Length: 122
Image 1: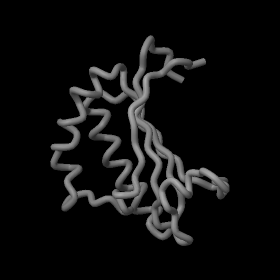
Image 2 (image 1 turned 60 degrees about the vertical axis):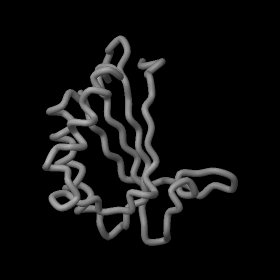
Image 3 (image 1 turned 180 degrees about the vertical axis):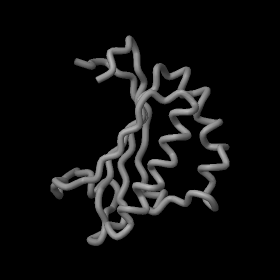
């Protein structure tokens, strides 16, 4: 685990059609290369295998997961928010991540994301 003073993390949760797992992995690997070229320290993609249904809140409820979908939980670690803020427009403009080259194999409208300042990293 990184021991940086103030790493910054972008976190993501989405529902991906289970049949698209291999396509998702290819998509994520290509995106990770771009993020790292623009300053990300680490890109982690996780495929849910123990994601319980909630009664009030849950990952599945948050992304409106359908029966044929799986939950992904991902994060990108940056050295700082300023590095992330400078890199993100470049990442979004990168031709390797355009929809016609590397389309998202899931419904991006149900992607939840946010940026987080690290406060404990032990």
